[in-house]
Image 1 (cartoon, helix red, strand yellow):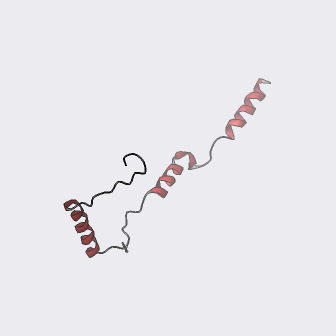
Image 2: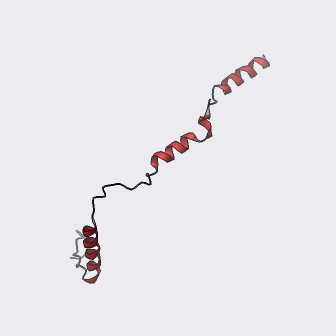
Image 3: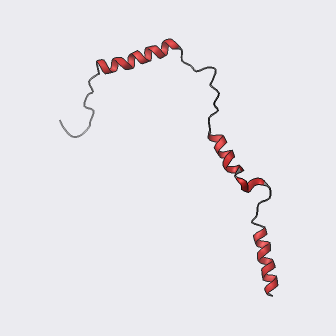
Length: 78
């Protein structure tokens, strides 16, 4: 009786094992690889040098003469 319970328990544990290299981190590496961006740059970036210079100049001008912000709260001070 005791021997048959041990055999049944071993058979149950054998069903839980994995076959092959699945238990050696391949799933984790596959998930990490799917979330990492490829290091090669894109050929079309959608921005040229003139647009980048204009954006930088606009950014610098925003600190020289900042636009006053209006009070947009719908409650509080009147």
